[in-house]
Length: 445
Ligand SMILES: Nc1ncnc2c1ncn2[C@@H]1O[C@H](COP(=O)(O)OP(=O)(O)OP(=O)(O)O)[C@@H](O)[C@H]1O
Image 1: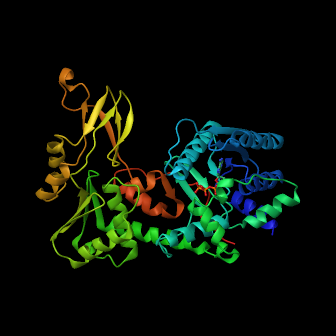
Image 2 (image 1 turned 45 degrees about the horizontal axis):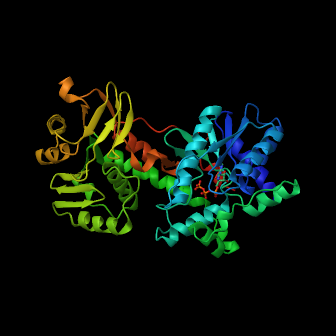
């Protein structure tokens, strides 16, 4: 029913903590066009004072028509009096993984536009159909259902900076199209949506109407509850030393049958290993077997050593493949996926070479067994002046911050409590809260 569309827009606007500026990511397809119009209409009613709309279209320049299409969307927005900007994907495009690269670039350009417009959030037109496809795709890859594997989040924090909200995640595409049709508004059909080379397009073609609407609203809530439990377990049973070693009490170490604890532990392991993604199912099973056995010993998985001793379980980065990072004066970069480093003075290099002594002392002072302190200090970063021969200095002035690989690029709203707990454990502030009351409310109904 087309009324569902405007109702979803109103419910979404009501969920804001205070009125703000919303950037609509508009491709020109039916879903994002419907979103723009629905928000525009809802705001016309005077019920929502203090809100404003701006819009951005990303021209991926992957098809010859894309520049004209983006310009047409710009004209459509101008006719509604909505400021619009086109983000251009310039430079070389990869041959492999083009969809994933386009997605990252798209979010970067949208985030840039949001900053330029002073917008408080970005909204996209993802629908209930997209949600069904995402879940089916994850299931086909063996990721399964349940609290550990909800579909797309209704809210997602991008690069710790800007919240991307999906007000139409509970709305059917057919309703959006009907809503546009009664208003005589047309839309663009992206040909890549039907291109069988892409996994999502293949899946879309094979899903029946019923499978498109599987009624999975509660999964997000289950996942949020699971995250809250995982966060509590982490804060109770785990300590992190210098961002280098995670220490877990012996009684908790083997509890791999608890799915919340298991997810919490492997997420921390991804942080320690400098990875964005969690280890695959086979690795987790192998790890669970090792930890459940309760026997002392070491196992390496996902670049992380799981060092099981009588007095606890210790996680630290394995000493292999550690990179060298060069930073110009006052430049920032990420070292080994684990540390964000900023040069506070002249150019410097960061490596694990010769870094051991000072870190080792700190880890021992924190009460860690000597063997653990020795091993973990070998994978600690050391910043040296790039020109140490002439400067004579042994260490360079640099600011270090732990990077939280699984959440620093994309943080799903339903994982926020676990992400915050991990941030605190690694000496960071909590993540920026979303501008809406409850990131899940728009999924109800
Ligand atoms: N070129 C674009 N410019 C602006 N916004 C876009 C563009 N492409 C997609 N979007 C936004 O993303 C939403 C989802 O689009 P689509 O389903 O094509 O992307 P996806 O690749 O499945 O999503 P995502 O990359 O976010 O997981 C659209 O409704 C729109 O809000």
